[in-house]
Length: 570
Image (cartoon, rainbow, N blue to C red; front, side, top):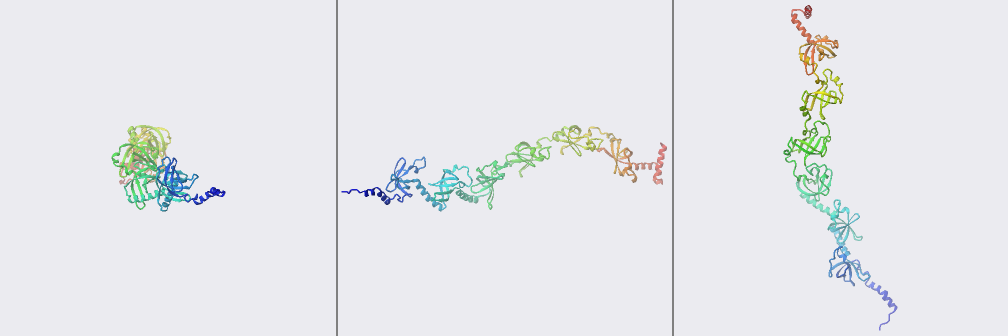
C-alpha cells in the first residue's frame, strides 16, 4: 500500500523537481543561438510547425519564408535550416527563426568571401543617412553614398532592387556591421575594360561613349574604362562657342578616334568626322560674285563671320563692311545672329576660307554720285569739317566732297579765303572731279564765277613784255600783278641785268615795272617774269638797230645814240 505523502515530498515535487529538471535538461540546453535542421510537420494560418528532433516541436512564422505580399512556398515534409531563438517558451514550444538562420548562414559565407577578397551579390533596398542598405542574402550591409558609383549619381532609383555584385570593405560580426562598395567593383571592371580597349585602339575606330565632363575647350567622353577628349572644334562642322551648346553630361555619343598616343595614352575624338564634310564642292556652290543670305555667328576686331550653311562660314573683313564707315568696329555695323546679305569675293577650299563682302551688295555711293552729278554740275551741302587744307562738304548721308583752299577764291589766298567759312554753313560748289576708285570728290567754290584773269591768260604769251604792279617784296624776289588780276613772280636773279641791282628792297609796293614773260601756268593762273631778260633783249635790239660792238663803239655810246634818236623822233 502506498505510503502517505509527507510535506517534504510535496515540497520536492512543487519546487525542487522543477529545479532538478532544469539542472538535468536545462533551460539553457546549448541549442539557443544555434542553427538546426528541421522537418515541417504541418502548417497553420500563421506558423509552420517544425520537428527539430528535440523533446518538443518548434514553430516559425510563415512571413519568414517569403517577402511581404508573397505567399510562402513551403509544405509539410520540407526540410529547412532554422535558428533556435529560445529553447522553450511559456507554452513549452521551441521558438525558431528562418530569417536568422539565413542571416547566420549568410554571415558565414560572407566571412569566407571577405577573407578571399571575393565579390558578393546583393540588392540595394533602402536609404539611410549617408548611404543605402544592401541585402547580402540575409545579412544587411551599409553602402556609403561615395561608394555607389565612380561618378556622382543623381538618381539611384534604377539601381535599387536589382541584384548586382559588391566588394566587402569591412565587416564586424560581433557588432553586426558590414560595409560594401559597388564603386570598387566598377573600378576593377573599368581597369579590365581599359586594358582591353587600349590594346585594340587604332585611329579611325568608331566607338560609343558617354559624356563624362564638359569644359570650355571640349568634353571628356568615357569610352568604357578610358576617357578621350572631344575638342569643341571637333563636335560639329558648324561653329560652337561652348560644348554645352551641343552636349550634356551623361549623354550617349558616337565618336571616332582622330589621334591616339600610345605613350601618353591620350585619345583625341571627333563627332563631326562621322558626318559629311560641308566644305566638299563648296567652290561650286559659292562662286565669286554670287549673293547669299547668311547669319552672323561671331564678331571680332577684324571683321564678322557669317554662316552660309551649317558648317560653312565666311569672313566679312572690316574693310568690306561699309563703303563709307571707315575705322569702325564691326560690332557697330552688324550684330550677332543678324541675317545679312553678302557677296562671295573669293573661295579657298584648301584653307577652308571664304571671303565675303557686305558693302558689295549695296550700291557704291561714289559711283552713284558720279552718275547723278556730271563734272561741272553744281551741288549744295553743309560744311561738316574744316581742315588746314580745305573744307569738307556733306553731299549725302554718307559721302563728303572736298573744297581745297586754292579753290575757294580767285583773288584771295587760301588762308584768307578760309576765314569766311565755318562748320555747319551751307555752301554751293561746282563738281570738279570724281575719283570712284580713290573715293574722292573734288569741289570748287570759286569756279561758280568766271575767272577774272581768263582774258589776260588767253592773251598773254611767252616772251611778251607786260607792265606789272609790285604787290609784295620778299627776300627771294617780288610778287607782281598784271592788269590787277593775274599774279606773277620775279625771282631775285631776274630783277636786273647787273648783279648789283638784283636787290628786291629797291622796289616799292605799288611801283610799276615792265617785265618779260618767261612762262605761263594757266592752271595755277601764274606768270614767271624777268626784268633781266627784258633788259638783255632791249640791248640786243639797240645793237642791231644802231650799231655793232665790233665797230669799236661802246654799248653806252650805242644806247646813248639810240636814246637821242628816240628823243628826236618824238
